[in-house]
Length: 396
Ligand code: FES
Ligand SMILES: [Fe+2]
Image: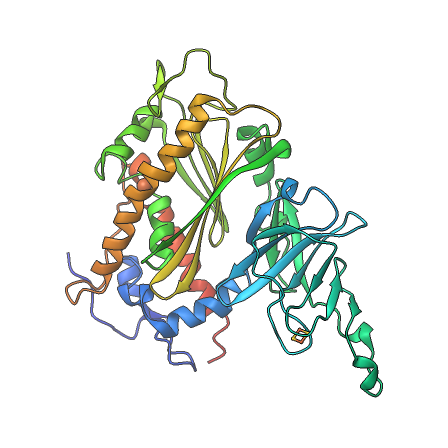
Protein backbone atom coordinates (compact mmCIF):
# COMPACT_ATOMS: atom_id res chain seq x y z
CA UNK A 1 0.00 0.00 0.00
CA UNK A 2 1.63 3.22 -1.07
CA UNK A 3 0.26 6.70 -0.96
CA UNK A 4 -0.34 8.82 -4.02
CA UNK A 5 2.16 11.54 -4.73
CA UNK A 6 1.06 15.13 -4.31
CA UNK A 7 -1.54 16.09 -6.86
CA UNK A 8 -3.86 18.97 -7.48
CA UNK A 9 -6.76 17.26 -5.72
CA UNK A 10 -5.60 18.31 -2.30
CA UNK A 11 -6.99 19.97 0.75
CA UNK A 12 -4.85 22.54 2.41
CA UNK A 13 -2.71 25.28 1.11
CA UNK A 14 0.47 27.16 1.69
CA UNK A 15 -0.45 29.96 4.04
CA UNK A 16 1.03 33.42 3.96
CA UNK A 17 3.29 32.32 6.77
CA UNK A 18 4.77 29.61 4.56
CA UNK A 19 3.10 26.68 6.29
CA UNK A 20 2.45 23.86 3.84
CA UNK A 21 -0.93 22.62 5.04
CA UNK A 22 -1.46 20.14 2.22
CA UNK A 23 -3.05 16.83 3.14
CA UNK A 24 -3.59 15.12 -0.15
CA UNK A 25 -7.31 14.41 -0.65
CA UNK A 26 -6.60 11.15 -2.47
CA UNK A 27 -4.43 10.02 0.41
CA UNK A 28 -7.18 10.93 2.86
CA UNK A 29 -9.72 8.91 0.89
CA UNK A 30 -7.31 5.99 0.81
CA UNK A 31 -7.11 6.06 4.61
CA UNK A 32 -3.66 7.59 4.95
CA UNK A 33 -3.00 9.65 8.03
CA UNK A 34 -1.97 13.25 8.53
CA UNK A 35 1.48 13.70 6.91
CA UNK A 36 4.49 13.46 9.17
CA UNK A 37 5.60 17.08 8.75
CA UNK A 38 2.48 18.18 10.67
CA UNK A 39 4.25 16.77 13.70
CA UNK A 40 7.50 18.72 13.47
CA UNK A 41 7.21 21.64 11.03
CA UNK A 42 7.65 24.99 12.77
CA UNK A 43 5.36 26.94 10.44
CA UNK A 44 2.56 24.45 11.00
CA UNK A 45 3.18 24.59 14.75
CA UNK A 46 2.90 28.38 14.70
CA UNK A 47 -0.39 28.08 12.82
CA UNK A 48 -1.59 25.65 15.51
CA UNK A 49 -0.67 28.16 18.21
CA UNK A 50 -2.83 30.91 16.73
CA UNK A 51 -5.63 28.84 15.22
CA UNK A 52 -5.96 26.09 17.82
CA UNK A 53 -4.47 27.05 21.17
CA UNK A 54 -5.37 30.74 21.16
CA UNK A 55 -8.94 29.83 20.21
CA UNK A 56 -9.86 26.77 22.23
CA UNK A 57 -11.06 26.00 25.74
CA UNK A 58 -8.17 25.07 27.98
CA UNK A 59 -8.70 23.17 31.20
CA UNK A 60 -7.23 25.06 34.18
CA UNK A 61 -8.37 23.43 37.42
CA UNK A 62 -11.29 21.99 39.36
CA UNK A 63 -13.68 24.59 40.73
CA UNK A 64 -12.94 23.50 44.31
CA UNK A 65 -9.30 24.55 43.87
CA UNK A 66 -10.60 28.13 44.06
CA UNK A 67 -12.28 27.56 47.39
CA UNK A 68 -12.22 31.09 48.80
CA UNK A 69 -11.58 34.76 48.02
CA UNK A 70 -8.13 35.33 46.58
CA UNK A 71 -7.53 31.70 45.65
CA UNK A 72 -5.92 31.65 42.22
CA UNK A 73 -4.46 29.29 39.65
CA UNK A 74 -2.48 30.11 36.55
CA UNK A 75 -2.30 28.31 33.24
CA UNK A 76 0.39 28.62 30.61
CA UNK A 77 -0.87 28.18 27.05
CA UNK A 78 2.39 27.97 25.07
CA UNK A 79 3.73 31.56 25.33
CA UNK A 80 0.57 32.93 26.95
CA UNK A 81 -0.29 32.86 30.63
CA UNK A 82 -3.65 33.33 32.33
CA UNK A 83 -4.59 33.93 35.97
CA UNK A 84 -7.92 32.61 37.23
CA UNK A 85 -8.92 34.01 40.61
CA UNK A 86 -11.91 34.03 42.91
CA UNK A 87 -12.74 37.59 43.91
CA UNK A 88 -13.84 38.89 47.30
CA UNK A 89 -17.37 38.78 45.86
CA UNK A 90 -17.01 35.05 45.15
CA UNK A 91 -16.96 35.53 41.37
CA UNK A 92 -14.36 33.61 39.36
CA UNK A 93 -12.57 35.80 36.82
CA UNK A 94 -9.68 35.23 34.43
CA UNK A 95 -7.06 37.71 33.26
CA UNK A 96 -3.97 37.78 31.12
CA UNK A 97 -1.05 37.27 33.50
CA UNK A 98 0.72 40.48 32.54
CA UNK A 99 1.28 43.84 34.16
CA UNK A 100 -0.16 46.78 32.21
CA UNK A 101 2.91 48.92 32.95
CA UNK A 102 5.86 47.42 31.06
CA UNK A 103 4.63 43.89 30.48
CA UNK A 104 6.17 41.98 33.36
CA UNK A 105 4.51 38.63 34.06
CA UNK A 106 2.66 39.08 37.33
CA UNK A 107 3.07 35.66 38.86
CA UNK A 108 4.91 32.45 38.06
CA UNK A 109 3.05 30.48 40.72
CA UNK A 110 0.76 27.70 39.55
CA UNK A 111 -1.48 28.14 42.62
CA UNK A 112 -1.80 30.48 45.54
CA UNK A 113 -3.98 32.69 47.67
CA UNK A 114 -3.59 36.44 47.58
CA UNK A 115 -5.77 39.49 48.13
CA UNK A 116 -3.89 41.33 45.36
CA UNK A 117 -1.35 40.81 42.61
CA UNK A 118 1.67 43.04 43.10
CA UNK A 119 3.98 43.34 40.14
CA UNK A 120 7.53 42.49 41.10
CA UNK A 121 8.99 45.27 38.94
CA UNK A 122 7.49 48.63 40.01
CA UNK A 123 4.80 47.41 42.41
CA UNK A 124 1.70 48.18 40.40
CA UNK A 125 -0.99 46.41 42.40
CA UNK A 126 -4.13 44.76 41.04
CA UNK A 127 -7.16 43.58 42.99
CA UNK A 128 -8.65 40.14 42.50
CA UNK A 129 -11.28 41.87 40.35
CA UNK A 130 -8.48 42.99 38.02
CA UNK A 131 -8.68 46.69 38.90
CA UNK A 132 -5.43 48.63 39.23
CA UNK A 133 -5.47 49.64 42.90
CA UNK A 134 -2.02 51.13 43.28
CA UNK A 135 0.66 52.46 40.95
CA UNK A 136 3.50 54.26 42.75
CA UNK A 137 4.29 57.79 41.67
CA UNK A 138 1.97 57.73 38.67
CA UNK A 139 0.45 61.00 39.95
CA UNK A 140 3.36 62.51 38.05
CA UNK A 141 1.92 61.31 34.72
CA UNK A 142 -0.38 64.04 33.34
CA UNK A 143 -3.92 62.69 32.96
CA UNK A 144 -3.05 59.17 34.08
CA UNK A 145 -6.27 57.25 34.70
CA UNK A 146 -5.83 54.07 36.72
CA UNK A 147 -9.19 52.75 35.63
CA UNK A 148 -7.82 52.37 32.09
CA UNK A 149 -5.04 50.05 33.25
CA UNK A 150 -6.82 47.10 34.87
CA UNK A 151 -5.84 43.54 34.03
CA UNK A 152 -7.12 42.40 30.65
CA UNK A 153 -9.97 39.87 31.05
CA UNK A 154 -10.03 36.40 29.51
CA UNK A 155 -13.10 34.22 28.87
CA UNK A 156 -13.71 31.72 31.64
CA UNK A 157 -16.33 28.99 31.99
CA UNK A 158 -17.12 26.24 34.43
CA UNK A 159 -18.06 23.00 32.73
CA UNK A 160 -18.64 19.76 34.64
CA UNK A 161 -17.17 21.46 37.73
CA UNK A 162 -13.88 22.14 35.94
CA UNK A 163 -12.68 25.64 35.03
CA UNK A 164 -11.74 26.37 31.43
CA UNK A 165 -10.37 29.53 29.82
CA UNK A 166 -10.34 30.64 26.20
CA UNK A 167 -8.16 33.41 24.74
CA UNK A 168 -10.75 33.95 21.99
CA UNK A 169 -13.56 36.26 23.09
CA UNK A 170 -15.71 34.98 20.24
CA UNK A 171 -15.42 31.26 21.04
CA UNK A 172 -18.66 29.37 21.40
CA UNK A 173 -19.51 28.12 24.90
CA UNK A 174 -18.43 24.60 25.84
CA UNK A 175 -22.04 23.51 26.28
CA UNK A 176 -22.57 24.37 22.60
CA UNK A 177 -19.42 22.50 21.58
CA UNK A 178 -20.35 19.43 23.59
CA UNK A 179 -24.13 19.27 23.98
CA UNK A 180 -25.17 16.47 26.29
CA UNK A 181 -21.63 15.70 27.38
CA UNK A 182 -21.96 16.91 30.95
CA UNK A 183 -24.83 14.54 31.71
CA UNK A 184 -22.78 11.65 30.37
CA UNK A 185 -19.68 12.71 32.34
CA UNK A 186 -21.69 12.97 35.54
CA UNK A 187 -23.12 9.48 35.05
CA UNK A 188 -19.54 8.15 35.21
CA UNK A 189 -18.23 10.64 37.78
CA UNK A 190 -20.83 10.89 40.55
CA UNK A 191 -18.42 12.76 42.86
CA UNK A 192 -17.63 15.47 40.34
CA UNK A 193 -18.80 18.41 42.46
CA UNK A 194 -17.00 17.38 45.64
CA UNK A 195 -13.56 16.65 44.24
CA UNK A 196 -10.35 18.04 45.63
CA UNK A 197 -6.88 17.90 44.17
CA UNK A 198 -4.85 14.89 45.29
CA UNK A 199 -1.79 15.52 43.17
CA UNK A 200 -0.63 17.21 39.99
CA UNK A 201 2.37 16.05 38.00
CA UNK A 202 3.87 17.86 35.01
CA UNK A 203 6.07 15.79 32.72
CA UNK A 204 8.08 17.25 29.85
CA UNK A 205 7.74 14.98 26.81
CA UNK A 206 9.94 15.18 23.72
CA UNK A 207 7.02 14.77 21.35
CA UNK A 208 4.54 16.88 19.42
CA UNK A 209 1.32 17.38 21.37
CA UNK A 210 -0.69 15.49 18.73
CA UNK A 211 1.50 12.40 19.14
CA UNK A 212 0.52 12.31 22.82
CA UNK A 213 -3.15 12.86 22.06
CA UNK A 214 -3.24 10.15 19.39
CA UNK A 215 -1.74 7.64 21.75
CA UNK A 216 -4.40 8.38 24.34
CA UNK A 217 -7.38 7.99 22.02
CA UNK A 218 -6.87 4.53 20.59
CA UNK A 219 -7.03 1.09 22.18
CA UNK A 220 -5.15 -0.72 19.41
CA UNK A 221 -1.91 -0.60 21.39
CA UNK A 222 -3.31 -1.88 24.71
CA UNK A 223 -2.45 -5.53 24.22
CA UNK A 224 0.82 -5.02 22.37
CA UNK A 225 2.75 -2.12 23.80
CA UNK A 226 3.95 -3.29 27.20
CA UNK A 227 3.07 -4.97 30.49
CA UNK A 228 1.26 -2.00 32.04
CA UNK A 229 -1.14 -1.75 29.13
CA UNK A 230 -1.85 -5.46 29.50
CA UNK A 231 -2.73 -4.72 33.15
CA UNK A 232 -5.28 -2.16 32.03
CA UNK A 233 -6.69 -4.49 29.40
CA UNK A 234 -7.24 -7.09 32.17
CA UNK A 235 -9.52 -4.72 34.09
CA UNK A 236 -11.89 -3.88 31.28
CA UNK A 237 -14.06 -5.98 29.05
CA UNK A 238 -12.11 -5.11 25.98
CA UNK A 239 -14.66 -6.65 23.63
CA UNK A 240 -17.04 -3.91 24.81
CA UNK A 241 -14.53 -1.08 24.44
CA UNK A 242 -15.98 1.68 22.27
CA UNK A 243 -14.54 4.88 20.85
CA UNK A 244 -17.06 7.49 19.75
CA UNK A 245 -16.45 10.80 17.98
CA UNK A 246 -18.98 13.56 18.68
CA UNK A 247 -17.76 16.54 16.69
CA UNK A 248 -15.54 18.57 19.00
CA UNK A 249 -15.63 16.00 21.79
CA UNK A 250 -15.23 12.26 22.02
CA UNK A 251 -15.48 9.37 24.42
CA UNK A 252 -13.80 6.02 24.84
CA UNK A 253 -15.49 3.75 27.29
CA UNK A 254 -14.82 0.21 28.47
CA UNK A 255 -17.17 -1.80 30.70
CA UNK A 256 -15.67 -3.70 33.65
CA UNK A 257 -14.40 -7.22 33.22
CA UNK A 258 -16.59 -9.54 35.31
CA UNK A 259 -14.92 -11.43 38.14
CA UNK A 260 -12.05 -8.99 38.69
CA UNK A 261 -10.61 -9.44 42.19
CA UNK A 262 -7.64 -7.09 42.18
CA UNK A 263 -6.54 -3.90 40.47
CA UNK A 264 -3.15 -2.17 40.33
CA UNK A 265 -1.74 -4.93 42.54
CA UNK A 266 -4.29 -4.36 45.33
CA UNK A 267 -7.17 -6.72 46.29
CA UNK A 268 -10.62 -5.27 45.68
CA UNK A 269 -12.23 -7.00 48.63
CA UNK A 270 -13.75 -4.41 50.98
CA UNK A 271 -12.85 -1.49 48.70
CA UNK A 272 -15.36 1.09 47.47
CA UNK A 273 -15.19 3.05 44.26
CA UNK A 274 -17.18 5.49 42.19
CA UNK A 275 -17.25 3.32 39.08
CA UNK A 276 -15.87 -0.03 37.99
CA UNK A 277 -15.66 0.96 34.33
CA UNK A 278 -13.10 2.82 32.23
CA UNK A 279 -14.44 6.16 31.01
CA UNK A 280 -12.76 8.94 29.09
CA UNK A 281 -14.16 12.21 27.85
CA UNK A 282 -12.06 14.26 25.46
CA UNK A 283 -12.71 17.91 24.60
CA UNK A 284 -11.12 19.52 21.58
CA UNK A 285 -8.22 20.04 21.39
CA UNK A 286 -6.29 18.69 24.39
CA UNK A 287 -8.32 18.02 27.54
CA UNK A 288 -9.29 14.62 28.87
CA UNK A 289 -11.29 13.75 31.98
CA UNK A 290 -11.22 10.08 32.90
CA UNK A 291 -11.88 7.46 35.51
CA UNK A 292 -9.99 4.21 35.86
CA UNK A 293 -11.79 1.08 37.04
CA UNK A 294 -12.18 0.71 40.82
CA UNK A 295 -10.29 3.92 41.68
CA UNK A 296 -12.15 6.56 43.67
CA UNK A 297 -10.51 9.20 41.54
CA UNK A 298 -11.10 11.49 38.57
CA UNK A 299 -8.08 12.18 36.41
CA UNK A 300 -7.23 14.99 34.04
CA UNK A 301 -4.79 14.43 31.20
CA UNK A 302 -3.68 17.52 29.30
CA UNK A 303 -0.93 17.83 26.72
CA UNK A 304 0.20 21.38 25.99
CA UNK A 305 2.81 22.12 23.35
CA UNK A 306 5.99 23.93 24.33
CA UNK A 307 7.41 23.73 20.81
CA UNK A 308 6.89 21.80 17.57
CA UNK A 309 8.44 18.67 19.05
CA UNK A 310 8.06 19.20 22.79
CA UNK A 311 5.12 19.24 25.16
CA UNK A 312 4.21 19.32 28.81
CA UNK A 313 1.93 16.51 29.86
CA UNK A 314 -0.04 17.41 32.98
CA UNK A 315 -1.55 14.61 35.06
CA UNK A 316 -4.15 15.81 37.59
CA UNK A 317 -5.67 13.48 40.18
CA UNK A 318 -8.78 14.41 42.13
CA UNK A 319 -10.62 12.53 44.88
CA UNK A 320 -13.83 13.18 46.82
CA UNK A 321 -13.20 15.79 49.49
CA UNK A 322 -13.02 14.52 53.03
CA UNK A 323 -12.97 10.85 52.08
CA UNK A 324 -9.77 8.96 52.85
CA UNK A 325 -8.13 7.60 49.74
CA UNK A 326 -8.59 3.86 49.40
CA UNK A 327 -5.58 1.62 48.89
CA UNK A 328 -6.83 0.90 45.36
CA UNK A 329 -7.00 4.62 44.58
CA UNK A 330 -3.48 5.24 45.90
CA UNK A 331 -2.20 2.27 43.91
CA UNK A 332 -3.95 3.56 40.77
CA UNK A 333 -2.35 7.01 41.03
CA UNK A 334 1.08 5.47 41.62
CA UNK A 335 0.58 3.05 38.71
CA UNK A 336 -0.42 5.87 36.36
CA UNK A 337 2.54 8.04 37.41
CA UNK A 338 5.19 5.34 37.52
CA UNK A 339 4.06 2.58 35.20
CA UNK A 340 1.35 3.22 32.61
CA UNK A 341 2.17 6.89 31.99
CA UNK A 342 5.89 6.28 31.39
CA UNK A 343 5.09 3.30 29.15
CA UNK A 344 3.04 5.59 26.92
CA UNK A 345 5.53 8.45 27.11
CA UNK A 346 8.32 6.17 25.86
CA UNK A 347 6.13 5.37 22.86
CA UNK A 348 5.44 9.06 22.30
CA UNK A 349 9.15 9.86 22.25
CA UNK A 350 10.11 7.02 19.93
CA UNK A 351 7.19 7.89 17.63
CA UNK A 352 8.36 11.50 17.45
CA UNK A 353 11.81 10.32 16.41
CA UNK A 354 10.29 8.07 13.78
CA UNK A 355 8.12 10.81 12.33
CA UNK A 356 11.33 12.63 11.39
CA UNK A 357 12.55 9.64 9.39
CA UNK A 358 13.15 10.09 5.68
CA UNK A 359 11.56 6.66 5.38
CA UNK A 360 8.17 7.80 6.67
CA UNK A 361 5.71 10.23 5.10
CA UNK A 362 2.37 9.24 6.54
CA UNK A 363 0.71 6.23 8.11
CA UNK A 364 -2.52 4.34 7.75
CA UNK A 365 -5.45 4.12 10.15
CA UNK A 366 -6.65 0.81 11.53
CA UNK A 367 -10.33 1.30 10.75
CA UNK A 368 -12.52 -1.49 9.47
CA UNK A 369 -15.00 -4.23 10.20
CA UNK A 370 -14.51 -6.22 13.37
CA UNK A 371 -11.99 -3.92 15.05
CA UNK A 372 -14.37 -1.57 16.84
CA UNK A 373 -12.47 -1.86 20.10
CA UNK A 374 -9.05 -1.38 18.53
CA UNK A 375 -10.08 1.19 16.00
CA UNK A 376 -8.05 4.29 15.19
CA UNK A 377 -11.30 6.02 14.37
CA UNK A 378 -10.68 8.76 16.92
CA UNK A 379 -7.15 9.33 15.64
CA UNK A 380 -8.56 10.02 12.19
CA UNK A 381 -11.29 12.19 13.66
CA UNK A 382 -8.72 14.16 15.65
CA UNK A 383 -6.46 14.62 12.60
CA UNK A 384 -9.37 16.06 10.65
CA UNK A 385 -10.23 18.47 13.46
CA UNK A 386 -6.59 19.61 13.59
CA UNK A 387 -6.34 20.02 9.84
CA UNK A 388 -9.62 21.88 9.59
CA UNK A 389 -8.69 24.23 12.43
CA UNK A 390 -5.46 25.41 10.85
CA UNK A 391 -6.94 25.66 7.36
CA UNK A 392 -10.06 27.50 8.38
CA UNK A 393 -8.58 30.92 8.96
CA UNK A 394 -5.51 30.95 6.74
CA UNK A 395 -6.70 34.08 4.97
CA UNK A 396 -4.33 33.19 2.15
S1 FES B 1 6.15 46.27 34.79
FE1 FES B 1 4.76 45.94 36.36
S2 FES B 1 4.96 47.65 37.61
FE2 FES B 1 6.36 48.04 36.03
FE1 LIG C 1 -1.54 3.90 26.14
